[in-house]
Length: 297
Image (cartoon, rainbow, N blue to C red):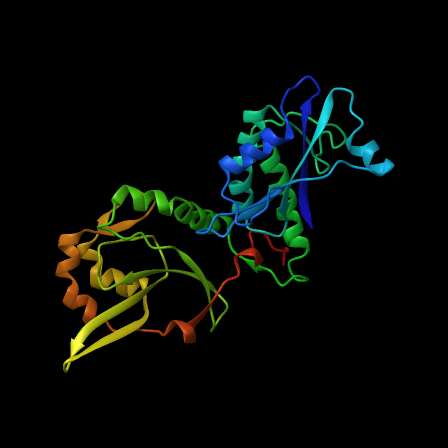
């Protein structure tokens, strides 16, 4: 169940298929080694989409559908994005697709369009994203139980995406003296509630996104041995123990601990009692089973 687009150029255009392939290779980091397919994944958010270069159509029905336009020529490049995904999959994908269309002056045959599904058109800004998003939301609710999907409110889902999508830029901005952790989604075993967590290792200078739990890694000396403890504390415990050492950070609802304060919390950090062991407490959420819509009860 997927959303597919077909790209066209004007017949007067000099754009070649090799130039399109070169553009995609230059502007995308593909996870597969192929000259004709670009599978793109944002490692930190786990959002993905793909583009492919296909052979020309040969059967009469396909030629009639895809090759029979007076003003447009099929580039034989297609885009694919699955449905039943978090909305941020579309945000990630169509940010690139819109740029791709503008940069190469392409037109789009969109069989899913409610405006003109039969002819290549120049889509407006966000038109493709909104088209996919609406259908994705509707399908997510329809197939929610059949595919055993996990519901996560879109506001929280977007916060998860926006933080992780910008994590690398934040790390580059702060440099090597700080650590910007990834935000993770887990499901609590006791009640199935989706929770957020991030890591904090050995009280190092760290950025803290708003989360439900913090996974601490403690290392300290005891009786001539180095002890390592790893486990969770709640956000309430975190605020109570470390809140006075934190400052606001220039990203939505994030906090930061600077090197001078990180050194001061060493003893507090190492004496903070672990409340839960992660393996016993929660399990990872499969991102591509997560959706932002569910059936009305």
